Image (cartoon, protein in one colour):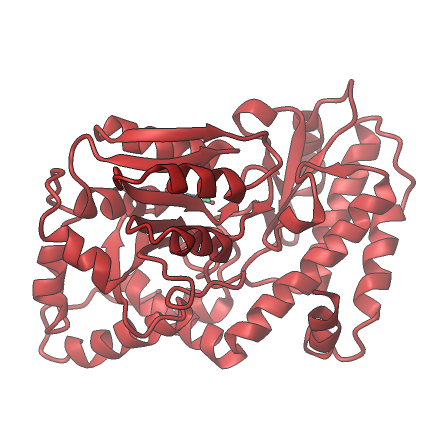
Length: 402
Ligand SMILES: *Cc1c(COP(=O)(O)O)cnc(C)c1O
């Protein structure tokens, strides 16, 4: 194929040139005396991305899944009760991981397309007078369905009844893309990964952990070794790691973190909102529905688009990939064949989104869907044209719309 392929899966995301160059390095000595002058400020700056002053950041080799494992094995003990809800493949997998580690999951099943059921959480927490629930899990952005949950509301539900449970957030496809506030929302463990909002290759689980969760880790008895906070803390304090760290990724993380902080997190969030609104305008113009049931659930990092009855979303995805060189995300598990996804997070601009929309539009027409040529693309263009100088101009409008 000539030209570039379009990568519009919701992770791995596009890696900016600057970051790609920054990780193309000769191998280095990870015990060099100069390493701490690089790592210590990085640990510090990463806290800003989580909007945390009191938390501690951990970089584990692994991916988001490893981050989930680190979160629970460090803070909980066998048989501990955790409250969780399932409304997509990622919330499902975290629950499965908890169960396989011997936790007792109080599970609320929710229709796919909705998010964390805050009212039900509040009821369960209020009824738990003996405080048997040790942790509450929230999948902030369910990547399988394009649904964003209200983490702040879960914190309020906990506070309402003075419940001491830890609050764990899967922020793998939200942190560094969608508003996230570790300290303000009283999050105890926030989990992310390198290959989504951080715009890096896969390979790092990036966590931020509250003092309360660190305290809990002292008595928690689930087995852990590779992901032990204790070993990380002991070596990180001097700027080193307990085992060989993936230095190229960590060098890249320096550059991507700089980019995020230079753009300004609120600008990063506004850009994602603005790009996402263009995708949603296209979906409306196609006459299609999002998997997310209500606007309050709409995700600014991924849209799961439902194909009409009688059509196979995988056919659209295959066609887009083979004929137009555009990767769209597949429907997972329950929604396989029913949805295709457009990932709109990371290093993206309007014209890149137009590539995704254009590829999807042509592929849908090729697959026989009744969408008018140019309809979605045209609607997105008109949305993007509204911002005279780009998304930053659009920030006041975004604020007003909230
Ligand atoms: C991508 C993702 C994960 C983790 O997946 P890995 O493949 O292990 O990085 C977890 N949760 C959500 C919401 C995700 O989008």
